[in-house]
Length: 485
Image 1 (spheres, rainbow, N blue to C red):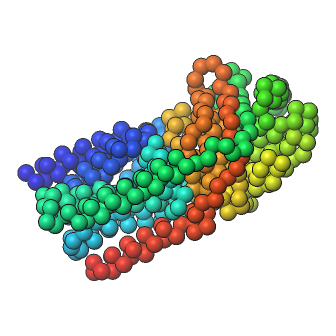
Image 2 (cartoon, rainbow, N blue to C red; image 1 turned 90 degrees about the horizontal axis):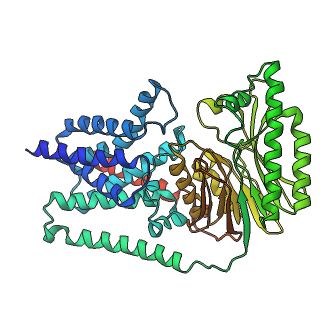
């Protein structure tokens, strides 16, 4: 009977995980962890195999179309992803039996943060799948990222699940569980109240800049053409035909930038590699873009791909920022290519996030997948950036999730973020993680986003202490494992 009940709780939790894989409904994550943890702790040791199998099925279904891998490689990838999600439950199940009392509730959150942190540092997926991202929408709790990064958020959610499961397993015997539950509820209340106060006291009178994001026309290229151009796989006839299309694409963006400038925009940003140009034509195009910026007195943040035909690494994925005087103030190459296709064709940057002082504040740039590495984007906070421009290129199935992940970088570093996205959600975010505007590439009609964005960063603790909290969790888990022996 115990085994049957545990399996039912496991299936209930895994069902929630399947549903949540495509978006954040933050209270449901608390329940999902609680149910799976209760099942794991209720089963005999060999029951951990059931936990992994059910999690593998749930995550494989939930991530279909999100993880960019074809069959059968997709299933191999999901084996490793599900193992990463399962390991904290296995550590908790094996270690907690050797600990007693409320202290045992710390093992699970320590293990969860440790596994997430190690994956973020050493796995190709970076911070994708972090429990913290599942708390998108819980703005008071999200403010914790300004202090200790996303690791603190993951710890809190896992600790709540662990503590309530411990009390559940003891039948909520008040003589035993009262004090630990009071401590946890009080801690959680303090975090939520502190985050709420931070939001409530956020100033609204900071200097702002009107911005606009553009997106390429949907009918200019047929499916697969932009990919072939990016890979430099064009014969002589194709080069002539594609050069004509690229000329039209360049005119589209330059004309659109003039239109938005005359409508009042002071910063106009283009998505990642939305503007493709052959290397031989790059200088002429940049001259035209500089002329537009100078004539219209606007900043142009150009997400572009320069194509070096017939070379082993043909693709320069970069962003240029041109100031209202027509000067190039940033030329940045993407540092972190997405593993697989992009990594095989892209020339990498030097790992430095550029930050420049302008008449309107300090501006920095990164590109798409770069923003999934908190330790990289931390350079924005360390450099005192006021605004971070992050051109991106997403996919239909994961566009919402990826846009939400960028919100945490804004909170961590106290910067506003402008994120023009091809095939995704373009967004503008303030330093407290509040979304100021969104435009969906896949929505009908005009896909231009306009918003008033504050260009006045706030100083936060996380860029100064880095991932200290995560390392403390690693050390805490090591101590727990040593004591368990």
